[in-house]
Length: 145
Image (cartoon, rainbow, N blue to C red):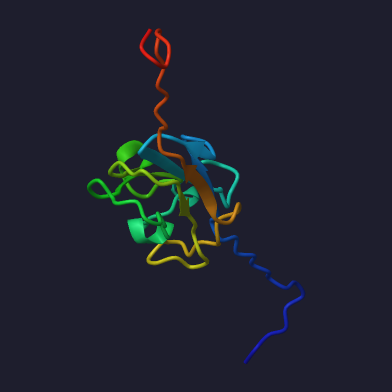
């Protein structure tokens, strides 16, 4: 038989939510980018409960337009082991002559992340790649004199 209780039990689940950043800022001429995802802590004390596992390159939803990857994207958990609360994604591109936006974003319930994540707190993080522009100068005049 069921017994009536005087106190209700309420459990509030807080999904770990990543905040994204890029070492190069919002605009760069570098063809090497490092993105960081810091998952917020669902509890106040640092412990294994604050960490996530199962993060993969595809969870970052990396978009890079017309750029060509110069190898593969490298994913690293902070401290070198999963689970972790901080993750980095290192991406290198082959040289390009055109400006392109590179972006990352975590969606709700991305891939196999455990515990199930919320979407990135700052939405889609975009970095504008601006190829280096050569500047020619000369100590002599335009006619060589």
